[in-house]
Length: 467
Image 1 (cartoon, helix red, strand yellow):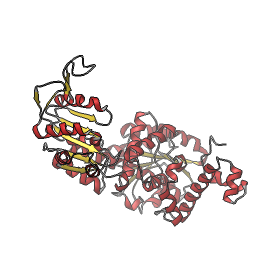
Image 2 (image 1 turned 90 degrees about the vertical axis):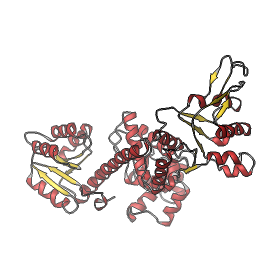
Image 3 (image 1 turned 180 degrees about the vertical axis):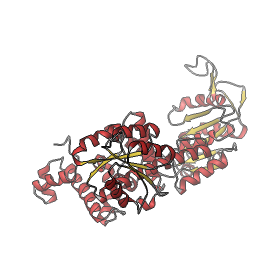
């Protein structure tokens, strides 16, 4: 996402007491951004309180109110807005320290045109992605009644539309999709948007309950119905009366219990294990599976009539690899989530990392992405971004990515960056295969060992713990 791809022209506030510096920055930025310049901290605070800005470039050394104090007051007014500190080269240590006060980054004088534009673009990309996540969460919460589903792809919009249509009904729903795609979130969204929202949503993981106990779990039992049944028990179907039952991993139900579930769907009544009294309840059934039930029907392992009773409204949740454009939103959502949850301050996810995330096929889907981001936050360093060298090898070297690199397919990163990225991965893989023996890796790479050591340093390869 470059300056011309942002959803609107970004407004940047430049704060510097040096008129020459203000004019220089305005000249660099005015072609791509709406630039406003002020000469001191109080003027900046007055403008921020009355106008909307997407980014602030703030000089570190100013009379009356210095950059650190101005930064504190800006953050007290608007903690979301990003501030980039401007400093002289000999004050870089103070500029670095300002990051702990809440600055996004710093740039030094004299200004390097390309460096300024790169830092600004990265900060604005982060801001607009965060805004998009917040908007999508509020929009989806309004549409579905649930805030944990993040997505803007066409395939997910189809799912949202179906949720909206079926939520008001009591029709049975069958949610299908690979493991980790968020099927339970879809069930939650349907219930939360339905007239049954004031009644319970009760989840039953059919695979997690022993087969000899699952009937009792669903329908309850009478005292003495089986060994250990020392008292009467209310089943989850009875407990959920007026609400929704979510049957996860429905494909694992034994044939005998499939017959009893079918009877319930037909009659809307059941008897407890060991009982004789018929109990009627009003519950909506939402089932989910990551297994192809049609294959199971052909193999005689799932009842055809039960399938049609459950599959009144089918919802297929797309795998993450088919959700084009959703990975950056999800990654930033999880980054914010784990920063807050773990009290960390991991700054951002670099563009190189995002390229890898979008190229990876995600066999574990959203659950795998969430686990990865949690791992990166736990192992990362505060005030430093997640970089390509931080990623695990299985993410960097899956087959599709290597094939893409060998074909020279590298998106829009340019030849130099693409070659550097491939070189980093190729050398890392060689080191891993040689159990981090540099001499052996150099022989396999057909380069001198000293050349390999220089490459490790220049490519910023993470070899800590393997030396």
